Every structure is written in structure tokens, then in C-alpha cells.
Image 1: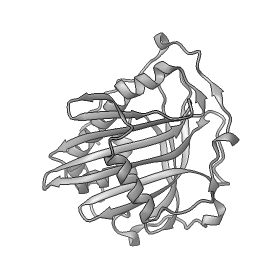
Image 2 (image 1 turned 180 degrees about the vertical axis):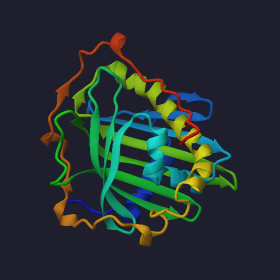
Image 3 (image 1 turned 135 degrees about the horizontal axis):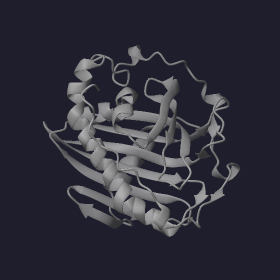
Amino acid sequence: MPVHIPDDSDFTSFREQCEDQEGWTVQYNKGGVTVWCREQESNTVQKLKMRIICKDVTAETLYDVLHDTSYRRKWDSNMIETYDIGRLTVNADVGYYSWKCPSPLKNRDFVTLRSWLPLGNDYIIINYSVKHPKYPPKKDYVRAVSLQTGYLIQNNSASSSTLYYLTQVDPKGSLPKWVVNKVSQFVAPKAMKKIYKACLKYPEWKRKHNPNLKPWVYPEQNTLPSINLADLSLQNADSLENIDESGLSEEKLHISDEDDNFSKES
């Protein structure tokens, strides 16, 4: 399939997957966070869905936090590097993200086409992996493939919202079964809680850091170079190196438990 910019049917399908319960198995359900898993034909591709109720956080704030790469550097301790490469339309761009995997797993990175859509008081952000000629796989990373990843933000009230995160990723590695269990039972819930904490602190932070700069809301503020869609191609998982990490021992796993609190200087 050629690279395409998501249309209304893509956003509708994504919303339906987030809200649909059929075929999903609950893996975790505590403290307002639920994690589901869906069986896939492939042993390497995992499909996870998460939901968190965010009290005292508006849908608009959630949307801003998930877009604001400057702020992401403050709260996402799993992120090594992220930057926008260029824009395709007023609501679609291409970006790079590298992710710190729990040791001894190798770190992963992605190049994705991302698109977003405000729906009244609700919002959707989705992405999938693409190839860009100027951003090939790097030597020190495993180039993973996002088949479909995104967020559904639902407005509950003037001061409450719900966040869904759905991800279908090929990590390009033969991972041991315990890694998948660890992700659904520990890593995923922690990540959702971290986003929630970041949202609570965002309004104050944003007031001190370019409070009027929101190019995801005001396209005229976007200064990214334009990208030609024809320069992109679909990232085919089969064309990437597949590494075997299935023999890694759970005893050697190290999950960073960095302090989620931001320093006062930030």
C-alpha cells in the first residue's frame, strides 16, 4: 500500500477500536488504569490498548501535552530523542522518536507519519511507520515498526477526560514471553500514569514557556519544512533487520524507576 494521509474513515476506525471491547482481554485493571491485549496471528506483533480516567485534566490539556515535544522532554523519561522532520498538511507531519528500552533489550526508534483531528470536544492522534530517504535506520538502534498507534481523548466534563492509547507495533525482535507480560502489567500502566501526572503540571509549565505557541492548534505557527508525500514509502517490517532477544533472562531486566517529578527549574 502507498503512503497516505489518514482520512475520516481512518479516524473513525481508530475510535471504534478504542471503544470496542470484543476480542480484547483485560491484562490489568487498577487505580483508574485498564490495559487490554489482543491476540495476533504473528508472535512478534503485539496489540495493546490502555485507558486512564484523568480527573482535573481537560481534554484540551491532554491534547496539548501529547503534541508538545518541548514539554515531552520534561516528562517522558523513556524518550531518548524526538523531533519533527517536516509537515505534509495542516494536520499531518513526519517525525522521529527513539525509545529507551529496559536493559538488556536494545533501544528502538521510529520514523512515523502522524495525523490529528479535533472532533468537537474530543481529539484523535494517530501514526504509522514510514521510510524517509534522509532518516535511514541507525547503527545503535533497532528500527521498529508502528503498524498503528494513537490516542483517543474524550471529554467527560469541564474538568475531566478519558485517554485511550492503542498501539500495534512490530519491535523487530524475537522477544521472550515475559517481556510482553512485563509491558502489560508494569510498563504500560506506569506510562499512562506518567502522562496523567504530566498533564496536571502542564498548565503552569506552559504559562512560563511560549504560552501562545501551539502550532498543532494554530497551523500558521508551523515553521516546519514541507515534505512531498511521494518522497515517503511505507516501512515494510520484512525489510528491516530482525534481532533475536528471546534468550534474555528476566533476572537481568532493569526497568528505570526515575523520579517522575519535575525539577522546580523546569
